Image (cartoon, rainbow, N blue to C red):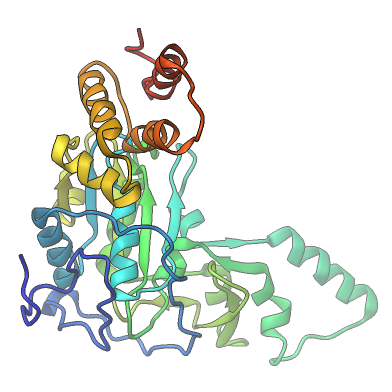
Amino acid sequence: MAVADDPFTLFHGDGKVHPRERFPPAPPWRLFDAEPIERPPAINPPRTRPPFLVDEPEIDLVNAALHLRRPLLITGKPGVGKSSLIHAVAHELQLGEVLVWPINTRSTLEAGLYRYDAIGRLQEENLRKERGQTVTKDDGDEVLGKYIKLGPLGTAFLPSNRPRALLIDEIDKSDIDLPNDLLNIFEEGSFEIPVLSRVSDFWPTVRVQAFDGKDKVPVSEGRVAVREFPFIVMTSNGERDFPQPFLRRCIRMQIEPPGFKRLADIVEAHLPESGETAKALIDDFLRLLGERDLATDQLLNAVFLATSIPIDLGAKTREKLRESLFQSLSGHGNR
């Protein structure tokens, strides 16, 4: 296991807070130098659940991604904890609330970066003309900025002295072009908002809304540029292959389905009084795992009901309930 003064270990995986004023230097080819903007610190809310359990190989890959400023691509079956890992990292390193971008077939790069309400702005512009109101160089935030809201990806790339944590969830469900579209922003560390670039001579800086709150953030010359590359986790259920140029820019992690000891540790962390009942349910869960697509939280649900409800459900009722809770996520394989 990592020792306290190990310079490689930024993330320990122990559920404790290990904040850092500054992160170690990035590789020369991953340095970004945008001027930081002042924002209220985004601190994770108090933790009310047990720490996420992480194995040492996974900890090493997380630390490699942090040092190299590269996205972490996590592949595994649904329910093995792919999306939970980033919350553990953000909590331990105090990176703020995790920004989440759930992906579907309609997701586009622009939607992840920002949203521009062109219709709303046009309606207000017509009202201004009807009222005979003129626009001045002090009106950029009101006339244009309030109609632009950064998306989770765009907010993660705001310049700050500490990286933000961004979850791009189920990227394998995206349109075939999205992974390649992400390559440029991952390499350049910046993106343009064309509607702001076109008016930059008149309004050099416009304050727009961030994704994670009501505070406004300044965008200069129509461009958002990162200072500290965000900690990005992309999850995949392994339903498709990705282009080699995309994979080359990622640190890849494969999470395998847990065995008995890992499941017992997870149950112990969440339900420490479950005892022998949990062991029997873990055996049933592992037996069915070879036939069905199951998630760890299905096991936790079954253990909780079997050990925490102060009534005797009867063996037959418990068996039916367990069978209902252990249904395959894919809809196949249930008996």
